[in-house]
Length: 250
Length: 316
Picture 1 (cartoon, rainbow over the protein chains, first blue to last red):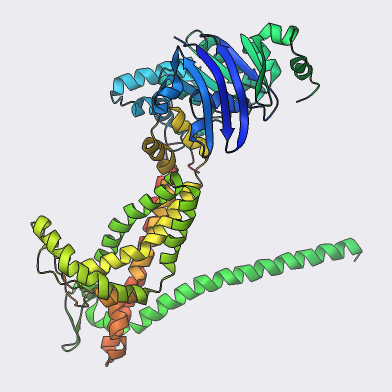
Picture 2: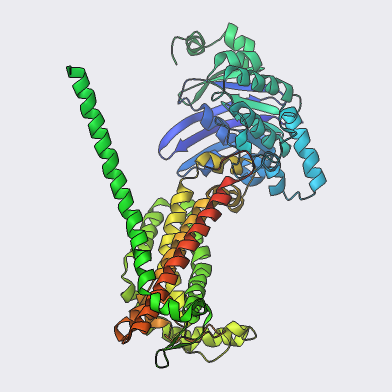
């Protein structure tokens, strides 16, 4: 099951450069929330705060609160958090030294699961959810690098799903893929929301319109507007949102 | 011939010249290699004719009785190099992990500089330091301690001498440490950050991230660095000669004096008063040459097999 997120006055810095200026935002569970905005608006920083990947960069810090089903993530261990909040990155990043199978179960092995049978079941389940099982079931021992870019990205999704997170963060997951592979990822996202809360960053507005239940528009480190996707695209309340979605800038 | 053809001919001649010139340079390297090998083979004919293959297995080195065998030197070189690898390998990789994954930028640049400085110290200076500092330390504290606690292993039996196999291995370890650390750091720095993030995002701790993202990705490069260190250890002459004890003997204890191939050549070359003696020394050089070649080839194979990774993919 997905968990809801509640962001309170989130501010983030890279060194002395402030990239998020007090974000307040509610993210509903089992929905797809898209974050849109021009390059450098802080959308990637924002989702990287949700699993505290932002903290891992030298000189980066964040203040404020992010409540995951009511519990502040900044009060707990980031390593534990990342087992609940999974992430898929812009460029597919399977582990090249590992086979397809080992890639999928990498997170489970980190959690200490050693039972071969359980690992196999989990791998099949995750690969099925990522719509990759049929394509790789006969070559699980092959390198993850032997797959196409789109397959690699679905492998990374399967890897993130295997640890059974409740929230899945996706940072422009299709921007490095061709249109067909992109379509498959989008189908996947809409299927996955029944089990996960999904936050997806995209600079492709059509993509946001196609898959997201709600959409948030970021500009210069501020949340300009957040609402149902149809409202954001049809009847934006803020002039800046309207300018952006009609292509007047960004 | 029109103008365009002229230009074409001119560039073709230029390319051909460049090609032949660079080919010549490449052949110089190959030629030198073959020449050195051949020359050593020719110069060691007398020894080869007299002792044959038994030169490799004979444990006696007795210039007075004109009986020569290379085994003690082969043993000394291999064992001292292995000690050096066993110590410098893990430490070098550890240094690289610290510098690359843990240290702040300031600490990293200072320590990297110091590590690289280690490589710049002349080996005779290492030798002096080893004679006056390392060997007494081994004799007075390290070897008695090892003997007391691990004395049931033959390696640590016998009286503490200081100058011996252990000292030789240790000084080699210190000398190859910068090579291993610097190369390991280079290859770890080349690991894409996306790999680290992939591991962290799965809920890996720092050490788990280093293990599954950094070390797994860079293992063939690290292995290459270790092998380069091994190459240096095998051929190192001066510092080893000064501390290894220079006794052509095969003794189980690491405390006991030993001898290495490079050391015996350097020490006895000027005293080789008759041609068979000289010829035997050259044959030791030939064996050292061969061992280095074979180990390097094996290292290449190892790096190659490690870098292949799982089927159907290519590790970068």
